[in-house]
Amino acid sequence: MTKLKGMTNIPASIEKAMAELLNVNQLIVSGKVEPHIVNDFRDALNRVRTAAWAASQYMARIENPNDSSNMLSFMAGERVRAAYHLCQLITNDLKHDDIDLQVGSLIQLQEAARTLSTQLLERINQ
Image (cartoon, rainbow, N blue to C red; front, side, top):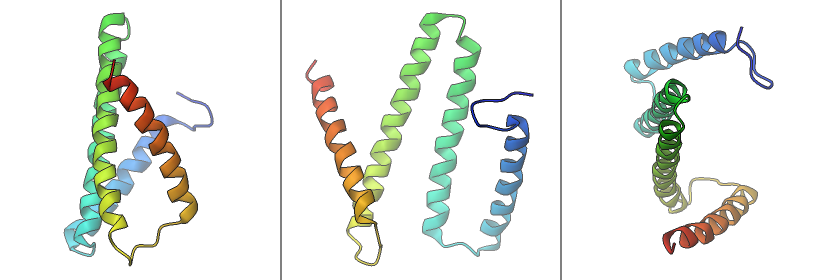
């Protein structure tokens, strides 16, 4: 039985997630889900798929420090790509007055974005 901090049996968790995905698939096929929700779901699945692939590659290459370093770089690059995509989506969300966003969350996001922006400029200028 594989356990991580606070996590239950990982294979059982994966099986449960797969069953839920099959249920979501049935909803999508039935046409009972709005198209923008399907797009968001597809994007989330793509991120999970990429992360799972990267994790499996990392585990397979962990014995070779050069390969694991490259995999960590790949995973960081994927996070950058995903962050860019999420920024585009959030930008569109902010244009719609009918979307309620909590001010506290927006403040936290702004602070994180400010810190990230500073670090990005430092990295770009290296």
